[in-house]
Length: 258
Image 1 (cartoon, rainbow, N blue to C red):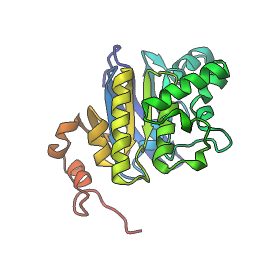
Image 2 (cartoon, one colour):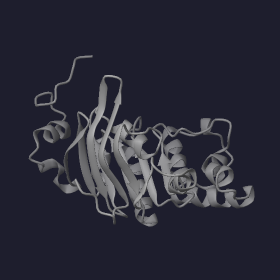
Image 3 (cartoon, one colour):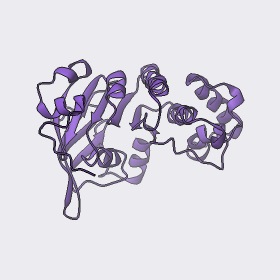
């Protein structure tokens, strides 16, 4: 598959194995700037490994991953640092530092990576919190004082605080009730749009996928087996996608009893 040089993110022929376990088996993805792609798939299909490869946390065995035409894995430290500086990330579970206040969590990158003064970073953190509907009174709270939904919002504020060009979302609604999950989905959609950011999300939550995606891709057995506009996911014509979307036990995807 030939990747366009105008793509924001290009993933070509990516393979990744852990011993005999072949997780990624030739993944190709091209994503234009400002678009939101959601990758769906069941547990163990390679979603998280793919995300870690894009983030540079894992090195593919084969293939290439580039951002703005620059390779993530085949470049010097300075270029790599510049590429990583374009990323913002909302981790599964929020991943907040218990020892830091809410505003210090949001401003962590600003202070420790970007060299912003604590005073300026706190101001920017409070502004980011406001964008996810959290008032300044939450700034000095600890993560333990927050509900699960509030922790997710703080995690989103941290992801957008540095105004990144690219946002990653790892199972953004896991552990949330449906109403809170919908709030998070709407916030993600609005902030991606406000930043004009390129976004890649991984999830098994179809409500989330439909809400935040421009396009949806399904990964199965380490390959992208379908990709299309989010509006077409319910009429994909692909039996694997149909089974996953409907949550049916019957179909080509075989699930082992736990």
